[in-house]
Length: 423
Image (cartoon, rainbow, N blue to C red):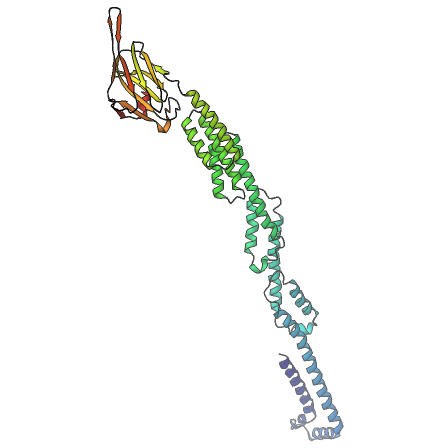
């Protein structure tokens, strides 16, 4: 470009010189149609010029051409410096401000006649526009982060909006978000707030006696969140479980109470919960001991009085019996025989009876019998009681049932559903 401008100027100067010389020479030759007088005057004028004058004119013209060429070279050199600055701007980021300012200052410092030779000035304008967009985008992210304020469980939407703006930035712009660490810290603060709120919500359910809901919500929270202290949630879940067991105990679901206590004891790591388990176990044991009927205790008798006697001998487990009339099941005697004991029921009314009995390790009451371990049977043979009067004597039936395996025993039984013990 520089060479082209210089050449152009030199050629322009030379043409100007030639045009000046032609005025004193060839101009007369081309005007042959003029009068002889005009030709004579022109020749005289030409002859009147001295060789010195011609030499001086050519020297001046050459000097002017040289000066013009030097000036063109200076203009091009000034323009080229700015062109190079613009070419060196590179990728536009929010950190491009200094290099853009340098190019802009250099351009604005050029004389008006030089600026026209900055051929890539449009690139500078585009770069400045891109820089404005980049810095505005970064500012928008910083403003969003500054606007978060105190982080609570309600801050999620605002935090997500800030993240969306940040993630929309080009990779090259993200490092210029000066308060980005505050957004990262906000995530930690938010997670802590959510955990604390979760624990508070579960505790509130426990305090309200909503134990099953507390357990469900606690387990769901652990499934949905990566918590920093899982043990705190697990302790509350176990506490809710213990509360649920207490509810079952108070509702007299005694076998469920025992089974759940055993299960929770095997899984919990909370010393507080373990202490609660043992407290309930002690109360349950006391209650089970209290509600276990005494040996030979009659729990129901709808038969009326008589003279017959029924002796029952138990083995290593206690037995609950229901002895009901064949022709009237609503007429029955229910009684309890403790383990390794025997009892005799007197005053049995005459009649023929079916014998149902249940056995197991732990008595949970008449509704649950021996819980899930209840084994219920019916004797294959009925038992009968009769009374006869002879003078002053009364003869009545005495029946003995040995309800465990003995050598040579002749009592056979058939398993039945435990509901048979309830009539």
